[in-house]
Image (cartoon, rainbow, N blue to C red; front, side, top):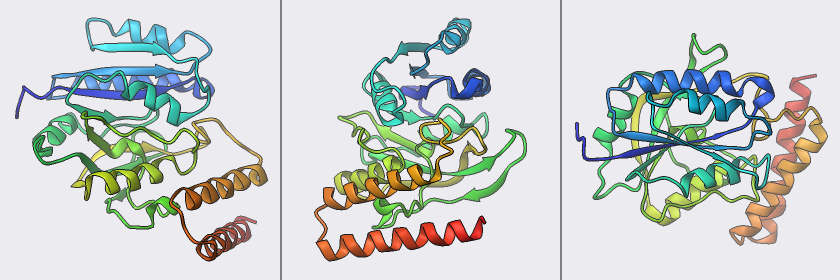
Amino acid sequence: MSTEIKMTICTPTHEMGGLGATFLTKSFNILMNQSFKNFDIVVSDHSKNDEIKNLCESYKGKLNVHYHRNTENIGSSSANINNAITKASGQLIKILFLDDFLYTNTSLEEIVQNFDLENDKWLITACEHSKDGKTFYRPFYPKYNKYIYLGNNTISSPSVLTIKNDHPLLFDEKLVWLMDCDYYKRCYDTFGDPKILNTVNVVNMTGEHQGVGGYKNKDKKATNLTKKNELLYVLKKYKHTILFIKFSLFLNDLKSFIKNLIHK
């Protein structure tokens, strides 16, 4: 294991309905026990209170945490993670969202051992899912597909992602639901295939706390409209033909219709 490589963990935070500090505490405690030690943490915080800030200060001397209050574009996960990425100093940037956490005490070591700084630009790992942070279900093994930017996410959340800190790409701040899928496409278009680490490295939390940027949205019609508008934006962004755009929007409407029937 190389100790020459430095990694920066980038974590966007906010109150998350009062659960933000709880999730971050779990993540910090796991980071404290990592076998790989040459890392720091950049926290970009959209919170309106000081709970996350105070928590970061309480880990002084235990973890190398750089706290930044982010008052721009409140509620945008893309803007918040971008703020963290631009402040990263490590050769590697590990994305780790607020409610997710590393799977084992060797998770960072495995990434560093498998990331070739000479040839690799981005690395993705397998992940598990959990509702309670203790029991796991549905292991997910990533792969890239050429239609991922349309919402066919075969990689999972950005928490499975590690990128080389060499003019790193930023997330499109016009996107919420497709922020990760669009980012993966641009990584592929810019850097080629990702390095894939097919061992579980991170756990994605699932549950009612989730929503747009972690904020709950109970208005299904508004949510579906936002998703449709984002899809239209992405289709135009990549200069698809009118016929392809219409067909994609039709499939999106059909998918929403079927999902609503299932949940009735």
